[in-house]
Image (cartoon, rainbow, N blue to C red; front, side, top):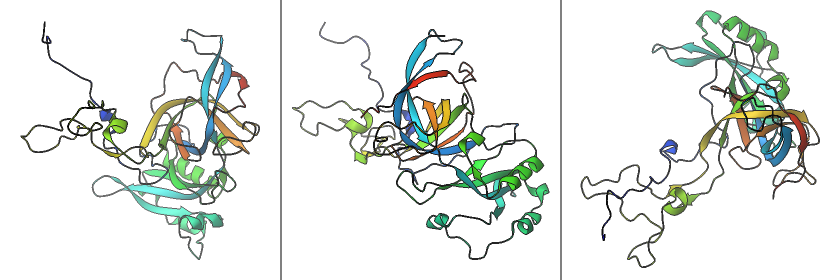
Length: 332
């Protein structure tokens, strides 16, 4: 037969889950939602992406076909310097029953490098006097304002400052925890444990302004076409006279805020993780590090934020596996 039977169809170009594809506002993202945890603890941490490697371990997953066998998986190495508890942020409810900040209490012993990021006050207020002004009856949530200590890592000195939620159901318990840790340094082992699952939030690698072929995977037109080869043939009907939002168009590609859910922490350690000569485009991991199973968004040196998994997988073991070897040769 000289004609096709049925309707000609093709898959949609690009995923609808990532619209709008706009540039992130800053190199490290915000986290708006946090898991509900009964324990009074910080619910997240942050680290710098160093590179990737592969590890060999004994599979301890109960539902895996390779249970008890030795397997090799790709992993991501994160350099996790300590964070410093800079301030306590108090949230209340406004007239529209929405959360808003009603007060902040800053620590006294802030690092001078923090002045590279924000303007520090000339006179430090006393912490006890500021805490006494807070009425806990008006407080509905308490969160920690922390900043990184990147000096000597990732080739940078300017810290990043962001907010981390505190777990627990009692405001008084949260207040005592925040008060006890204000101005102190927090290591990754104080927040996360091997075997836990975390959601990774990061800004992807930027690729600039790109056309439809690279940005959406549009098929090339025939080389005998009258118009462009690397464009969309038809962008819509004559009526209505507008371009539908789902039509592939040129624009920004990469440097987007992205979530990667349920990453399994295989190990948390210190020293001796970097390959010979250090990781490509990063260098040597000097102190604490995190090994996550699989890949992580973003290039090397980018700050990767983590939070406890909101909806963890039930099939992933709560205990870390027995790691046999960690490769010391990075894939370059």
